[in-house]
Length: 176
Image 1 (spheres, rainbow, N blue to C red):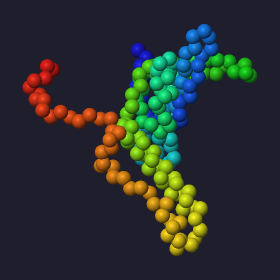
Image 2: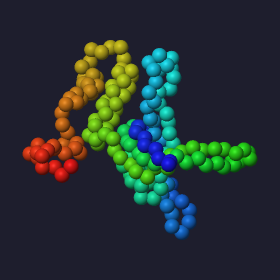
Image 3: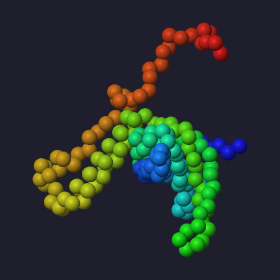
Image 4: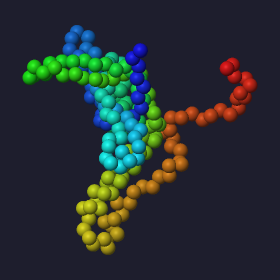
């Protein structure tokens, strides 16, 4: 049996291409950064704590991934490991190991992903603006646009895709 389930963040935006031929097929390649459990001592010593796994998908799945997946997004995929080889321009045999995915899931809500990206962008803008300001900070107008917009993590966003729990159902009436 050859089946793999991965959960991680996209290390880059997916790249879509189409095969040559009478009926072109979409091919998408992307990289998942999957956390690795390592001891604190090894992590403090600078050891890598994530594996970067190359993934490929085809057809309608590829078009879905290209349309909805973005760099930094937490996703879960199901697929199989495939090892292939080819000869490079120098005549050397090269081996490639990749995951061919056929099931794709979002592992975080859209609101959570967008909120995290907005927060990161605000922090980046604050750093850029504060590093470009002079040492004279007495002008309040020059600082008014550098204040980050505060947003509580407990606030529920109207874009959140989770459904409300219906508490009117009793466990005794369930068929399982």
